[in-house]
Amino acid sequence: MAQFTLEELPVLPLAETFALTAAYNADSFPDKVNLGQGVYRDEACRPWVLPSVRAAEEVLHNQNANHEYLPITGDKQFNDKARELMFSPKLAKNPNIRTVQTVAGTGANNLAALFCAHHIKPKNVFISDPTWDNHYLIWKTAGPEITQKLYPYYNASARSFDFDGMIAALEAGEENDVVVLHPCAHNPTGFDPSQEQWKKIAEVIGRKRLFVVFDSAYQGFASGDPDADAWAIRYFYSTFFGALSDSQTNPPTGMLVCQSFSKNFGLYGERIGALHLISPQSVAAEGAYTHLIRLIRAVISCPSLFGARVVNTILSDADLTAQWGEDVKTMALRIQGVRASLRAELEKINIKGDWSHIEQQIGMFSYTGLSKAQVERLKDVHHIYMLGNGRMSLSGLNESNVGYVARAIKDVVDH
Ligand code: LMR
Image (cartoon, rainbow, N blue to C red):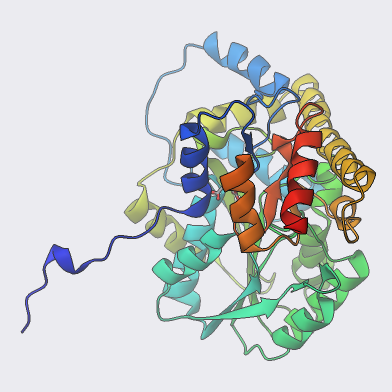
């Protein structure tokens, strides 16, 4: 048998968002602009610690807490609060939603994929085209035997959500196939289905008896209203898994909801998230929950403390929760303002084409429609960094650089 040597492994490129951040940091050009990684920046393009988070840090500082292990499932109070935020306090009481703490959204997605690969064993996983690039990698590493089917999501010529393409692709799903959905602020396109479209998507998924994985990374950040941003998830839950719907014909076979606190609490580096396992009311899923716990034990043993303490401190206190509500509005409104400014600047300088999509999209990103070559030129000539697929992280824009960025975009469009 041929012997394996480490040399056989090819050198891989760094994940694009992290490579871009590194390249931006290494660039000495004074007017460089970072529109790459999806991280919120304030008007002066500085990282922003949410006032609610600062206040929670004060509370925690005075608590003199110890550093013991959490349970494998995480901090119970945090899990309860996370579930209430995602599903509403009323629905969160239902015993068919079981929660574990995770290592941010990536950890939740990874655990969801591992759980599906080990126990659901789908033939296919449906992932949106395009999507956050890590979805492909997570499913490839957690479930190499699962075929990735890409469902159309974006209509490039109309610059809009490809509803018909998505529905047609899901119609080809087989029972227990997994479908990964973005509930709000789709990354990277910024186009979300309308409520009517969600209802149709749910109908197909139920009829085909698929297994749903929601990846919620932007609750509150998208519209400024955490309840509005959770609408699709709560709709799926109430339609298929809520108490009154147990006799529902054709429910999906189950649902996992990945919840990240990176963006909406600005806790990027603290790696805090949750995963919710939802079972049909008629299914005793205690065993499934223990299998989730076993996977956590294998991968991280138990989750980390600090982020859970911060989120729990905020969501357990009415004043801090209200402050957090203001904080997400501040972020969402600034991004909406920046969208309007960029579009206005582009139109002021008579750029070719229609740029109204910048304002139609929602969340952290604009899927600009710029080509890979145009994005390259933005970086090489103008020191403006964004993803090769044309995704721009809008929070890197402010009143002082938006004109410069607009002129640079006009240059690459005209070039
Ligand atoms: C992004 O999409 O830019 C962020 O979620 C950061 C990442 O991990 O890619």
